Length: 382
Image 1: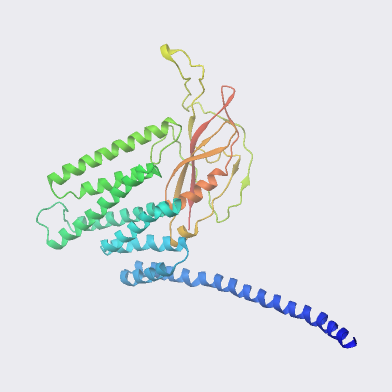
Image 2: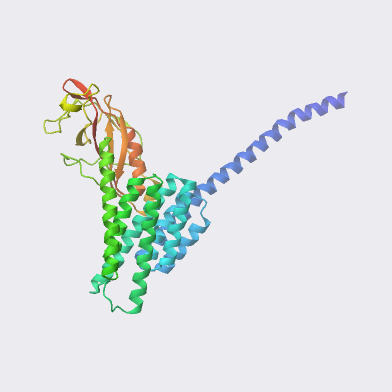
């Protein structure tokens, strides 16, 4: 019995010590994993910075090789998107249309699985592609070469034909996205832009006539979309809003903490469009007549509460900056609904998210609260 008691005593002493050691080992292992994960981000960032420096130094092959290696090993979707956008610019600068179109096709095909993320990346890629194509065309102009000349050397003819093929594929992709009603307005705007460039690269009179028709049809679709959006109180991207005043840019920092400030109740300026009552047949006022949404232009500085957007990691890595204009509707209670935005693609989501956190005091017209529409400008600076 005494030996059994001694055994129990040993167990009671040894077991807690063993458990403490086991927990310590687990905590140490977890800390090591966290440390590795944290340190992993630094080499990746350094590699991206190196690739950017190589591209700036026009060592395009070395920059592309570095980015392709990162892209192939990336498990993080955001990192893969960053490298894809950077590669698009590099490949177009060195006229590698095969690889640039392959990256575009891959992102376009991924849109059904990743939905909004891949669509945003797709538009970022096409934006980069348009920049690269315009730069490529400017190179021809700087040497006094007209792409429509019929006696160009075979090398130039081949290069321009590949450029036309890329543009035609982008136009077809934009049409497909429009038919899916996902970011349809952005797709229409992209289609118009791409077709306009393709028209400027017409081979001959017959080719020009064909693409003039395509371009005119795209412009009509875009105009119809603007009218449709405006009729439900939305302001389409790129459309001019009436009585727009100069906006005051909101200062951006890297924190997303909201801050509040009180402002006097908003009133409709005398110069603002007056809401017209809905009328029925014969000019009689409709029973359901309500004031239409009043457009007041820039809303910066009139908010009761504002939220500063966080700078997206992907945008920082690619050096994206600029002003995002977020179009909103403010209801009778001062609550904000985002309808659209324009500006750098990689910054739009952060700006829209911040805008939804804004609120306003009710706008009063003729003694009653009314809805107003306008826009909020967010400036992103690196």
